Length: 243
Length: 348
Ligand SMILES: Nc1ncnc2c1ncn2[C@@H]1O[C@H](COP(=O)(O)OP(=O)(O)OP(=O)(O)O)[C@@H](O)[C@H]1O
Ligand SMILES: [Mg+2]
Image (cartoon, rainbow over all chains, first blue to last red; front, side, top):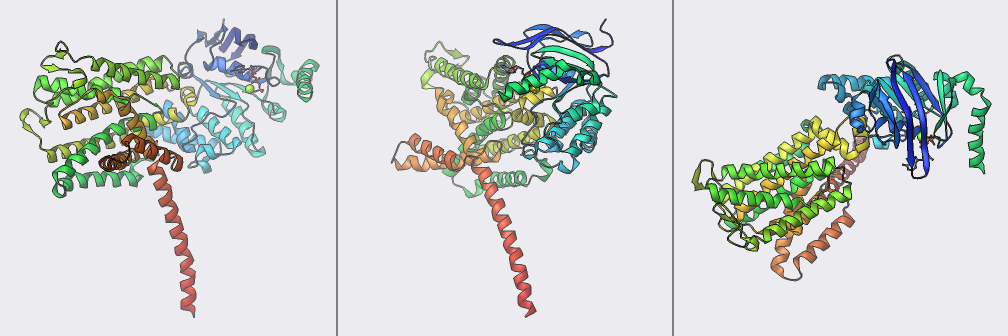
């Protein structure tokens, strides 16, 4: 049934008081698939991610990782089953260096000497080697994104969740990121939440659109782009904001 | 803060000072000074227990005295019963550490918020204090040791040479043994902090969410850190008990917990040497002020504390480090300025 799926959710729902942030979501992701997750602000994308990682305990419904029900598990237990997340607001160890941050991640999977190598490799890959000794708390937003990405990828999780990874990045950083995402997707399943359409176009294939906590559309990216209803929910939001 | 030990000059300086004092101290100090400094040493070990869990584990405990007192009473009761003080001293580490692990399990696995953590540690201390105060009657004895309630336990044995209960340490020897313990605690904590375990603790202090998102079990980590701190606090309690040969419920007092907080805050959170300096400085000050009888000691100490927090919010050691670094760089740039001038002079 769910054998070739790395991730499935069944009627996943997350309420905050009266707000239904995630509404009955039935989502599935194949092993090794790269999926983009779109949707206007407040659509529930980040909340959906947090339900997957155990940062939030869903109000109802279930999350399965390779067929195993992980609903209600603690974050570190879920992570140790092979999930890595780059959160929307970079979550880093601000007081310590870039290298130490990444090494902390690498050390989870590798013995000491290997962890060092792995950390150096990840710094190189993510283009932050020149920042190795800098304190993470003092970096620019885009650089922090890259450091967090290096941390996530250092653990080589089979399921990678990236919440707005391109935000705050320069053009060069964004190009590097796109390459990295594509490379990662060759070995792992990846879900990318992003608002940056140019970036999305570079990486997206099959795409899910969220609106008001629910899945609104699922189709190939070209189809999504030309979908009037999808354009309207984005425009509608913008109109709301403008009003 | 998390530098590797090999490059940590401050560490070797502290180690050097400690070793020199340990061997030279008894030769140059009189008995009163030795006794006084021994007290600083004991309280430094106690301060280190909180400096570690707060500064390097992010655990703010308002009840460090619970473990200090537990260690003191453990040592008192066990040594009065056993005669030899070696095993009681070991127990004074193990029992509080075990109790800390249990309490920590309840607090961290119960996912208590930081505020409740403060409240729970404080309440536990109060409970100990209340309980032990109510043990004045003769029915409250453990073996040969009467707990004595608010009267405390007198005639606690002085530390002896292991295996020979009649070979008591004299004050100079006790100072040296305690100094050795302080040095060992300092070095061991420094090694723990530099280890992978210690780095994870610091990571948890920096960002709990990211730590668990990397797969680290922060509850287990905190329990271990808390238990280590509890054991060290307990051991310092035993040192206190044998140093005074007397212990009373004040070991469990709020004041005792507050002192640890003050020393760590004044010395600098996230350092080990800072709280030791703060112990020496503030204890010395309160001794001086105490003999002057101008004002209530606590009022003065409270005042000093407030001034420290307002003027040196980062604590003594970090401020001192920043200052000396600045002086050094200023000095260096001055030197650079001088060089071209010298050149010019020789040109003439
Ligand atoms: N902890 C919370 N408590 C209450 N409401 C919340 C909480 N977290 C999210 N929400 C609400 O849930 C809804 C979905 O928020 P979420 O952050 O998941 O949206 P998003 O799709 O990630 O938006 P964006 O693109 O702006 O990041 C919003 O209405 C938000 O206000
Ligand atoms: Mg979001």
